[in-house]
Length: 81
Image 1: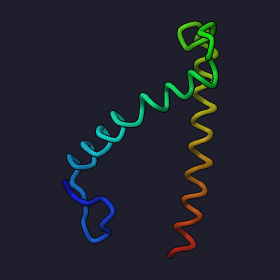
Image 2 (image 1 turned 60 degrees about the vertical axis):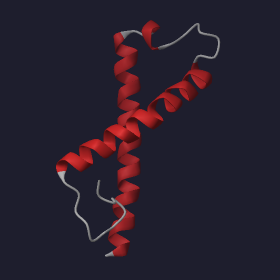
Image 3 (image 1 turned 30 degrees about the horizontal axis):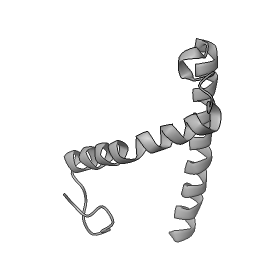
Image 4 (image 1 turned 90 degrees about the horizontal axis):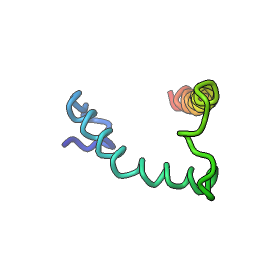
């Protein structure tokens, strides 16, 4: 697999896929478990108990966070140009 930190090396689509899957499989459970501890420590809430509307609203809030992260990254890249 390519060294994705090497700016001289372009990753193939398959390498990007494999890297994303590897990272997800190593980090997703810990992230989800931390969310349980933060939002549902006693087990009385949880995603399975949320209404469909609440799930959509929560997903939209997460998407908004992504916009903020991408905007910050974009500004850093502009400065680096």
